[in-house]
Image (cartoon, rainbow, N blue to C red; front, side, top):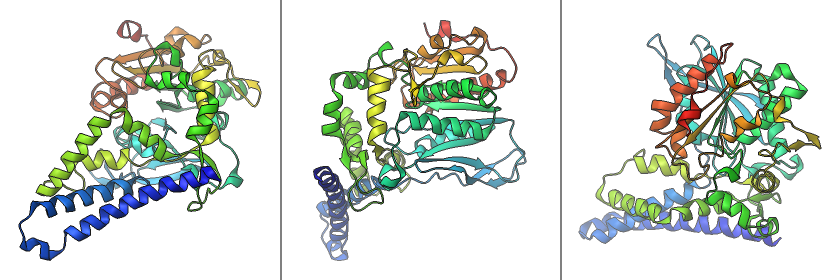
Length: 422
């Protein structure tokens, strides 16, 4: 019960701050205060507006915001977001463009389950939608999943990916971003042995911790320093009475957000103080750069406790993927069984979450895959976000990924990265 009380306390603090912001905005906006040209009221109203929006976004799932698409015929077509597979912990979505000719490239974009919603990949989806049929894994907020639905750990995550790949068929190209990279690799190996005909055509792994020890970062150091017992005691809480998942053990999104912000506290503090000043001067807009970024960044979701713990223990501490010792329901998943899926890795030279070396380690594990089907790319000046959603992705990485996808359709792929990654 004490964990449930702690969860409710965090929600109470968030709700109280949202209320304080709304109250300040309402109070300072009374017309009578306009009779006195006192900038304090403008500042108070601005502080209230920014504060209310900030704390409200923490419990609001962002919208995809992808409604129309201009096709080659010059016409705007509506984008329909259809649910292809519906499951308790996550759905498979298809961004369909009715009236457009069917694209030859079919991509499964595997979104992370690491505290943010799949909408974090909105710009990635938009960029791929131009030339591809795009499918996305849309993971659900654990606080909204009843306890009766059972557990969800890294093995369940991997089986979900295998089911999604099976549903989409063997002409699929899988693009995994960040956290799911090692599990997408495991899901492909699982299918390679259990259902070889269901394997995807290619697998593109972007900035993920296949071997966390290959290049230590603050994230991997944390996983080493803290024991599993400490994590259970300090990071997990029970969902409170306000949500359908009442009683479920989770790693709260608000706690994860606090960790994110603490890593760059001064930068965030400066961003919010500058936004308050802009609002006070009337220079803001609902979709300005600050709001676009923080509306997504602040929107966090709870992770199932068993998924969080098993990720830390099995992927980071025990390095089960890196040592090719991962199992599902006691059955070994041998990465060496992957022998016909073209695999490409992408890393950012300035990635401080999954540093260069962690992702490319996947290629050495694929002992059954010919070198002609392996490729990798290092983007020297890109950080973690830039390799899948920033300018580096748009200008350099996306064209390489599409070229690799086209080459994997029955053609040999030359290794271009061994010299780039050096």
